[in-house]
Length: 357
Image 1 (cartoon, rainbow, N blue to C red):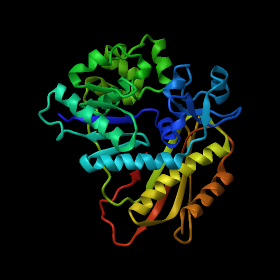
Image 2 (image 1 turned 60 degrees about the vertical axis):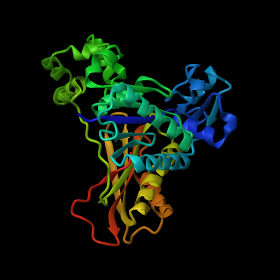
Image 3 (image 1 turned 135 degrees about the vertical axis):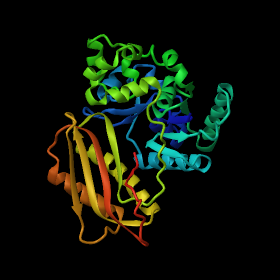
Image 4 (image 1 turned 180 degrees about the vertical axis):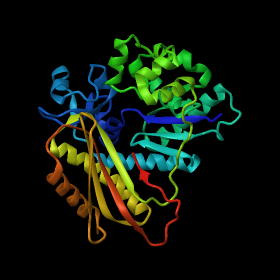
């Protein structure tokens, strides 16, 4: 049986801002866009005590907490911190899968082999402390027999939590939780489940397979596997040279402000371009992607006659593509992709796409 660990940096953007400016320590801060149409991406725990939360309109947050300090995010800085953390972890744990800018999965089956639960807890506590010593970031860590259980475990106790949920512990830890806390159950699905009496994860687990199939259709097997502790335990670490590189971000709140959208696109491009330089490649094709409130996904591609010379040239192309195609609708997700890559030497036939976040 594998032992999968999920590491989640607590309030990552807010922590990063405190690292830049220590005078913000222990103050109610939020990262987001100020003004009437602004929304918050995240906030510190000091702000959360007053009911401030991710996705809240900035105007409402300031009404609740006038002393709230709202900071426009420095996504380049966040990306750099994220890369430093993951590179640090890869030195000891090569089987690492980046899940987003502030979280990753690690296959620790070898490191935790033959350890009992108390020894596992001690090992993870040392890891949590070492991360803080290295990069001054506080994190929560979850350990489970699958990626789903590891993710649920890291969410179980925040901040600075360490939780272990093995298959035998599912009913103890997960069944009492509200159905909205189940990873993979979206904000649209949980109210529908509650209308038919599924208020907790335990309620869902007690439904027979026939009922689950009626509720979830073809995806019902995934939920059965999650509840049985038999869902995916495969941690994918990208090693081969990619055929393409992409990055995408989901907004915490519906966004139609073009400046906010382009800031997020710039962050996605920064991540893609950094990986492009890392693998020593050039790109000729750029792709933009966005998803609206109805979960309709749109994508456009542009292929340059020559390979792009630098990141600014690519971003100018992204801006032009948005000007030509974006119709002002509210968006939930944006992304950037770099394709038609060229290397100094011939690449392997086993090359795959890289999806960063």
